[in-house]
Each structure stands twice: as C-alpha cells, then as structure tokens.
Length: 472
Image 1 (cartoon, helix red, strand yellow):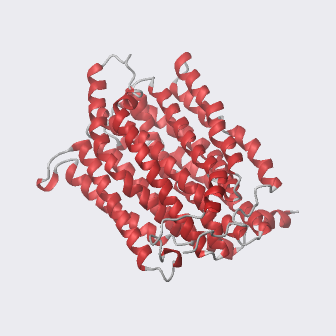
Image 2: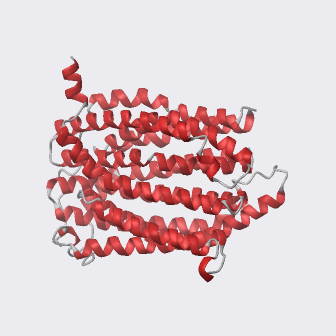
Image 3: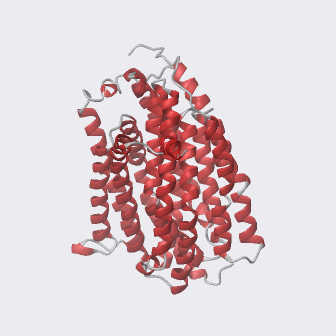
C-alpha cells in the first residue's frame, strides 16, 4: 500500500532533477524581482505612510493590467506549449503573433482608462471619512505623480511577457531570468539615485521610483528580444516572425473559444482582488499600509508557488501536446503533491518571521502590529492557495478554460468579494478577522478541485486539427 502511494505521488530522482532545472531559474527570477519589490516598498515607505500608500494604490491598478496581460497571453500560451510538444514551429510562430495582437490591444485600452480615469480610480481607495484630509490629499498627489510615469512602462512590460513567455514554453527559463536580474540592478540603482537624490541626482521620491521601474522594463525588453532574434537556429519560430502579421483563422477561432475565457477570467479575478483590497481600504490608511506590506511580503513568499504553476503548464502541456495523456496525469499528481508539502513549510516560515518583517518599515507602530497579524494569517493559508494555484494551471493546460473561469473568477465574485464587502462595511469585525475569513474561504475550492483533478477530464490535446491555413 505504502509502495503504491509513493509510486503514485512521489517522483524518482530524474523527475525532480528535471523539475528543479525548469523551476530554479523561474524561482530565482521571480524571487529577485519580488525581493526588489520589497526593497522598493521599504525605500518608498521610508518617506512616509502617505507616499507608500499612494504607490501601493497605483500598483494595485497596475496589478489589474498585469493580470489582464497574463490572461490574454496565457490563453494563447496553452497552444504554444502544445505546439512545441508537437514540434510545430509554424504553430509557435502564429501563436506568438497572436500574443502580440492581444498584448498591444490590452495595453492601449488599459493606458487609455488610466489616463482618463486614473484619479477617480485612485480615489476609490481613499476613505473620505478619515479625520485627516491632509493625509488623503497627500496620498492622492503622490499616487497621481507615480501613475503618470509608470504608464510608460506598460509597453515594455507587455513585450517581455510575450517573448519571455514564449521562451519558457520551449523550456528556456535561464535567459528570461538573467534579463530580469539585469533589469532589477537597473531598478535598484535608479531607486538609490532618484528616490533619495544620491550622487548629485535630483531627489524625486515616489516619482523617482517610478522612473527607475520604467527604465528597468525597457532594459529587460531589449535583452529578451535581442536574445530571441539572435538565436533563431535554436528557436526556428523566430525566423520571419514579423515578415507577415497574418494569423491563421482556425487558430484565432480556437483561441477565442478556448483562450477568451482565460483572459476574461484573469481580468475579472484581478478586478475582484482589487475590489477586495478596496473594501479593506475603507478601514483607513493604516489598513491600506498594512495590507500593502502584507501583499509585498506575500509575493516574496509565493515565488515557488507561482513557478510551480508555470511548471505545471509547461510539463503537463507538453505531454498533452505529444499525445500522452497518462504521462500528463502522472506528472501532474507528483507536481501537486510536491507543491503542497513544500508550501506547508513555506507557510510556517512566513508565520515565524511575521513578527520581524514589519520592523523593516519606517512606519507607525499600529501599521507594524497590523501587518504582523495579517502576515500570520497569510502564512497559515498559503498551502491552500498553493494547491489551488497548481490545480488551476492543471485544468488550464488541457484547455478547460470555461471550467477555470467558474473555478477562479466566478467563485471570487460570488464568495470572497461579497464576503469582504459585507464584513468591512456592515460589521465591526476587526480587519484581521475579515482578512482571515476571506483568505480561508478559498478552502471551499479544495472540495471542488480534488474530484475534478482525480477524474482526469482536463487531459486534452487542444492543438489537434490546428494546422496553418496560410502559407508563410
């Protein structure tokens, strides 16, 4: 019995070696990125709670754009990973073009919304009932200044997602990591020079942080694009990528059917998460600052969770594309088991360090105390979210995007969003209790995900009969 259990849920040495080779560069890349985000947070936070809160609000709006891009491109990436598994470079080329179309469209729409309605959206996070109008006005001013600059980073961010995402579909994770490391160094240097005005540079505070971030994104884009185009022998789909902008109609139709729910899902999920945070913000600027600290630290402790999601998408997607559904199911079981056990340990580590982390911030004691409590809740709930995240990518890899829509964003708007709205606005429950209720209500998803995963209904090849209609 024990032997059968281990064989079913535990891989051999070769399996974990393959997994580590794949995810370590992604973990390093995302880990460094999130660590620098933490440093950004600390640097801006040292200027005061108003500046930190203003930047945090804008980054929450950017988060919606980020997830929209991720969802739009991921809808096409389902096909890219399976095309690569089939060895279809023509299909890879077409899918990459389609990613560019989706990315440009979403960038234009998002930029227009933020230019026209940015102040109004920022104002949703500022509780007008707080007895400190000067603090609210200062926070609004810092947020608007930051937003005006950060918009210039949308295009390079989108291009990096298109190119780096496509490279990852082929198993190339090292170069995107190195590009990210270089960009991070640019960001850190820019922060040091421009936030505080070191070495004769102007002291630009939050605006300086925005300039450094934008510069780093353009650098990252240049590195990833140059590498991809200069290595067209290794990546044949890069040859003639821009020779034509045509995409076969059959692929567009399949992506619209399979991928559109994914894009809508990511957008609605991001909006739902933003709305939940907006509900928290009704409790005042102290809560805005504490939630910002918690979210930044959460991202740092979640890098393996996010990388494991990508690993599921790549490894399971390639197996499905090669027509090996049983291998895909076996790989997925082992990935899910490893992911769950790993994040029990990471969650405990977050709980253990929660009393220490808020003291890195130059903010009020009340903010530190609240952040510590929220971090403990986040650590306790991390294993649940790690399993759900991997389950989402499992169903997505087989093209079950309608199911993922109901599993993810539909659930978010039906359960956590109304719950946070009710608890924050119509009860006197402390914010820690409201936050815990929202975090742990996702345990319901476990009861939904486990039987769906065991059924194996998700193990489908989505690129069958997707041959190019148009010659290159």
